Amino acid sequence: MPSQPPEEPVPNEQDAPPPKDTPPPGEADGGAEKEVEDGLEGNPDTPVPEHAVLLEAMQWAFQGEEIVPALLETFARHARLVLATNREVNLTAIVDPREVAAKHYLDSWRVTRLMPLYGKKLFDLGSGAGFPGVPVAIAETEARVTLCDSVQKRATFLERCVQELALKNAKAVCERAEDHLARNKVDVVLVRAVSSVRENVRTLRKVRHSLKDLVMLKGPSWSREVRAGEREAERLGFKLDTVWEHELPGEMGKRAILVYRAPGSQGG
Image 1: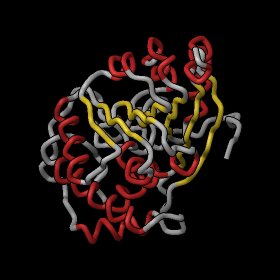
Image 2 (image 1 turned 120 degrees about the vertical axis):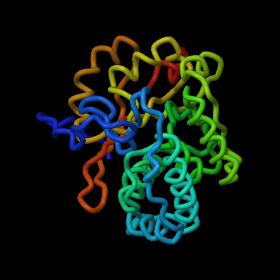
Image 3 (image 1 turned 180 degrees about the vertical axis):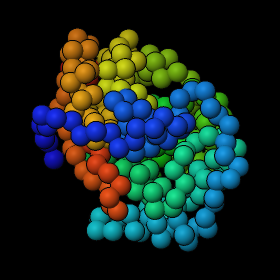
Image 4 (image 1 turned 60 degrees about the horizontal axis):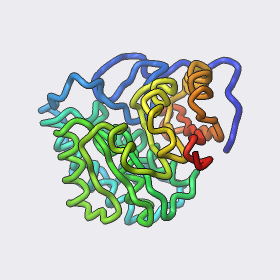
């Protein structure tokens, strides 16, 4: 539901700066944290639970949500691909099944509850392990989703996910987001734990007429980021339209989805 930024921001729950999954406060503090570019080496000790274990975790995380059970099955299949590949390529620091289910899948899927995505072109900027793009593509089969990552190893993994999960409405590309958007117009750019609000709008400054909505998935310090990036967003023509706050189960923290209207929405 729309809300106004509180007077005092809540401190970010993830203050440590590890690789792919825990961004520094005030920057990439969403649930699916993406690594700073310099650590691609995987973790050979990553546990890879059986499908049934991951499915149970999905059922726990999505308890009380209106979701088709078949989607949870596919989420669990993707989660197993992520954890298995994480042994070779750094995709996530979150490996506990219930944390994976809540922080990666529930957090990503909730975008589909906020926005009408039927028939729209979506662009997942810096997709990494596929968040939020893969859960969104699984849930919204009539949306067309481009999973973009500039690192070849991750883009190769994303292409594998598209093929193994038979995602006919998704494709993976390996290139800089700005280069892709310079040639292709989209309805929505999704950004999850890539950088701060200010840096994300700066990244899109040259292609801001190629998108209609910029949707950022953030952590509890979202209001601080909004204020810090307000001047830059306004200068570039991005207008904050909606803030939807929500909580993850098991006291795993607060999250927010920020929807900015981009210059492209005005036909410019």
